[in-house]
Image (spheres, rainbow, N blue to C red):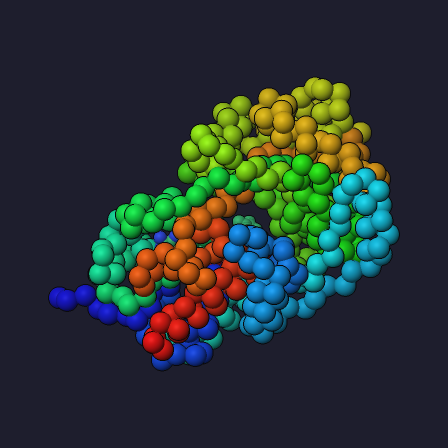
Length: 430
Ligand SMILES: Cc1cc2nc3c(=O)[nH]c(=O)nc-3n(C[C@H](O)[C@H](O)[C@H](O)COP(=O)(O)OP(=O)(O)OC[C@H]3O[C@@H](n4cnc5c(N)ncnc54)[C@H](O)[C@@H]3O)c2cc1C
């Protein structure tokens, strides 16, 4: 049987894939197939779903300018219909930050919550189906199947049935978890790429009374010296979570919607951006080594340490997590241990100095009970060498989203999808 034909195959139902699908469905009559290897989009649209509508949050400067981002953010807003959260007393915190050579950026932001985001995704997918897009979930693109004439093979993960397709255009948006998949595709297509940036850090968990800024500003973005920043703050019903990768775990955080009430806790990431230079081969490999070291020392789990123990230069133990001095239980009970053994000292020093600065801006965050979880690592960029501003990497093939380093967040990923779609629309018009 000869392979079925589609004008466009979009791989990944994350925001990058959805952004492309909506633009193409609205403005063309092309036949579009949208696939995902999972049964629901597995990225941040599903987890927590905080949307940032202010440049440069989530927009890598290598791919975006303020004007470009502002232009596309207006379109993203049209689809995601965010309810922008209020921000109070920002100037007070900004002044305090400036005094210690730091900065607080004020962001237009909305928050959906992990429990509600699935309804948002379902609504978007149903909308696409109504517009004629064929959607297949639980279906993966096999990286090694790619052939020069844009012929590829899909596999239904449940039945194992494979199907060959021929495409005019392929948009690959596999997200962070799709790094190795994307690398395999780039190697196969001989697309050069750089992989030299990663963020390494910790997730901090404390009581809201020790970080009350979240009552004024849901996800405050502080920038500290040495490329350290706060990222992805959660409060309300906030939880730290483990994310499973092939050989290790990373930590992350999210919050449920306001329907779930308040558990009195807040968590946020404190990340240091590392830009590797020759002769280092791969940021991803560095991330994997760091995470595996922690996995080894943590007995197959991430490590958590109370600030009080860290200050006294001693490891945390189960006793550090009792109800006496340390008056809240970890929401993600992993291995009580010593971050000093697993975080490279340069990184730990910069993170700790930033925490001290944060504690002068918001006194209390370094309460002895505050917990630091490690590793929180963001492996971003397998950024291909793009042939044009639409993220084309070879004729008919576009690579976008967090996996390809065109975004670092939901809104920028969606905007990347629109840019790739515009490339296809432009190509169809010529
Ligand atoms: C736990 C967590 C919480 C986050 N919270 C936020 C947040 O609150 N706000 C924010 O702005 N950002 C957040 N992020 C980051 C955000 O998820 C990403 O910036 C965004 O989702 C990137 O979009 P994407 O479309 O590039 O990739 P993704 O959203 O990751 O989507 C990629 C999709 O491709 C699929 N896929 C991969 N390989 C294949 C294949 N071979 N075949 C078929 N399908 C494939 C995956 O299953 C996945 O569904 C979070 C990330 C995580 C992991």
